Length: 228
Ligand code: HEM
Image (cartoon, rainbow, N blue to C red; front, side, top):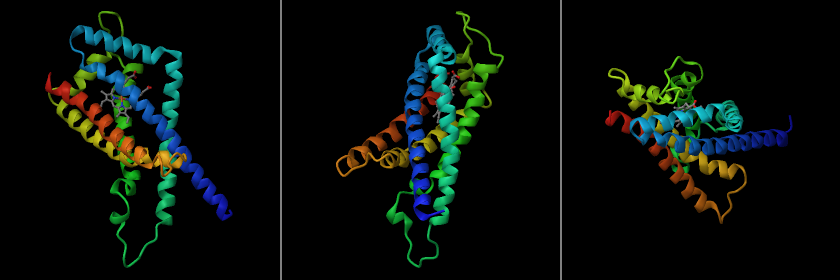
């Protein structure tokens, strides 16, 4: 294969990595907005969240977005493995003077590890809630909707395992945050939107997204655990 084709294919990989990553950021915004309803207490909050969960699993347009999300997660993970391996092969070794920490943030050098932690979280997380909603034997609420609200509350307030789930989720959100810390600004650069004019704005917006969104996600299990 010619050198230019190799370059092209690695550029294409970076492009699709960025496109699927940015789509997943949009998913995170929507998912967070839906999950913030878990702060609403009482039976009203329970009915509202379950009606929302029913809409999210039955609406045809949302279903298409869900399939796109599953596809993006798989594609992003597989493409990520290829890119990480290519980067490891290309990395020069054995220089007497090599200080990677002076040239790049540690998150950028550990995107593969951080991504793997996030992927493990997604698998555990989907088996906890998504699988239960679709195929689990869960009860129904007063409106006759599947009672996903009680499943979520029970996970974080269980007397023996609730604290493990809560701490596990908070740690996973740290990994999500660190992954996004490098990922968001890198994605904008890969799709060609980083210019001397936009560079600073992209950096600030990327860092803000990477801190605020995971922090809000983490606040949900903490709130549920603390107010049980
Ligand atoms: C920490 C707070 C979070 C809570 C309480 C939460 C809650 C839920 C619940 C209840 C579901 C099932 C909804 C359904 O199937 O209709 C779900 C699905 C899902 N969650 Fe989360 N989630 C959280 C964070 C995250 C994060 C940070 C990610 C990604 C890194 C994520 C990825 C997903 C995915 C991919 C699905 C399947 C969505 C679909 O079928 O369209 N979640 N989550």
